[in-house]
Amino acid sequence: MTKIKDLPKFERPREKLISKGPENLKDEGLLAILLRTGREGKNVLDLAKQILRKYSKKRLLKLKYEDLIKIKGVDSAKACTILAAAELVKRALKIQEETLPIINSVKDVVAQAVYMRDKTREHFMAIYLNARNELVFKKDMFIGTLNANLVHPREIFAEAFRQNAASVILAHNHPSGDPEPSEDDLTITKRIIEAGKIMGIDVLDHIIITKSKVFSFKEKKLI
Image (cartoon, rainbow, N blue to C red):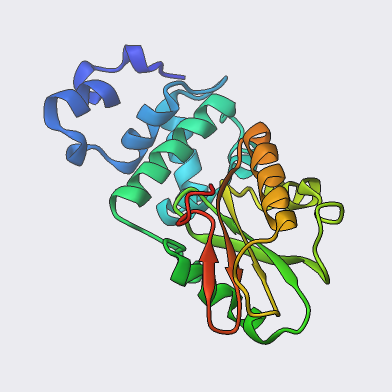
């Protein structure tokens, strides 16, 4: 096996990037820089070539951590480097999954929970977002008269971990038509926010929906 340090400097990925710019490196050279080191029997360039023979660049960008560490020669540090680089590129180019709506406003939340307007019983929904504020999952957590004894943060955050969510938005309806939060609504929201801080998952807002009105805890500075 030829070691990278045994190659002429102009063939080494990092030196070539510095002298000629990243646009003049082949795909395996760019990946080799991210990998940094090879594995037993293969230098880093050979490892990069092997990975790219199995995975196209597009597919590589979609691999998750669990997939990457299954590749022989890719440990946790290398997997994290690849994922971080891929995510930075996606954000810079504003690449988003077409099937994932972005939630940036109260209006966006209401669009996801509009079915609640005509419900005669209370529905309590959790909307789960990734770090780009894309909706990854939503679920009715409770149906019926809500009170602080029935709504458990553990169920909300257990689902958040299952979905790898970065944040959550709460939404529920008031069939009475009055959008003002009840004492139970305030207590429930406070409890969930405190649990979120412990879990490292932000609670971005809690929206109360009626047939014709909307109340946002964030807009009212209650969050």
